[in-house]
Length: 392
Image 1: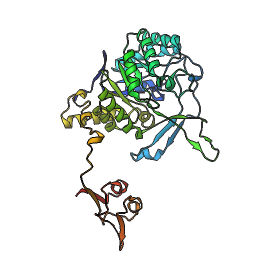
Image 2 (image 1 turned 180 degrees about the horizontal axis):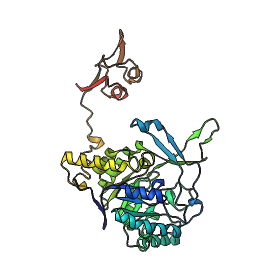
Image 3 (image 1 turned 30 degrees about the horizontal axis):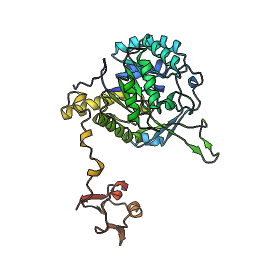
Image 4 (image 1 turned 90 degrees about the vertical axis):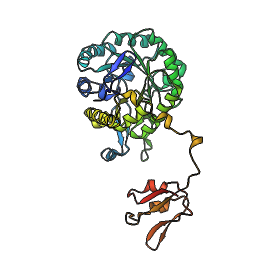
């Protein structure tokens, strides 16, 4: 069997899958599922002292295109979650108890913390260090708080503040520190670099976006009345971009890919783009913790088929294969043609063709090779696979 283990500073993870902070890691029942899921680690729901940030809105979840989950399509999870509702001093008593059980299963506990000032950041760091955490994640990505509140996304968009917070927490603990990087509003690589300079031993790239759904009948936001976090499988290409940028920047610490993972292929693709581990939340929420075992089998099978014996064998292998914009060829002629037997005459390609190369001749669709630009839009639109793309 391939060796799936990875290392973050002095902590070895049995495989690259970490269950991210959120609903799947909160409560004793969920924690037990995390421990038994075969994931290498899980991140606690974020500990915080601020009272309003510990009160969960209800309702708080909405899924766009839920039918897509059964058809391997793109769906989006829209939500407004806050932090751990239990006071930190009470929660760490539980954490201390389940950390021992987690270690019996070779599972690591990553404590997520979010302070609002020097006192609370320091207090939280010391508290989790003394109560069984293996690593600490500094949540500088969510929730999506108001502009005058120095925590979550607001703090995460300020690279110098991120540096100061990491530097502060670094002095309060010997545990490995993970910085959770915001995904919008600023260059995540710049934020990651400042976190690392402040003492981060690893960074998570990146978090979900902030979004808004409106009910046009009431002209108000749906459900909870405000904005919320917005993510799903559609985010994977964006995460891969930032992983590549992180690899190019040579951050010198492990990078953990997050947001957008929906299947084992996403996990492999993140590692190919330079991630040494991944964090997953949305997929666990909609498919359940049991999906992790399947992913691990599939990852092992993929590695065995290619002769990879460890994660490091293919980590970052795709980065150097990415062509720079100026090097993408624009002089190779391509074209499309329609296979008449497969065509269902839906006319999507005819309506969409930017070059008016598609027309109806008698009762069949046909493509004029002289007008066809080779853009491949017709191929991308055809759900029947009736359009062939070829090099002229």
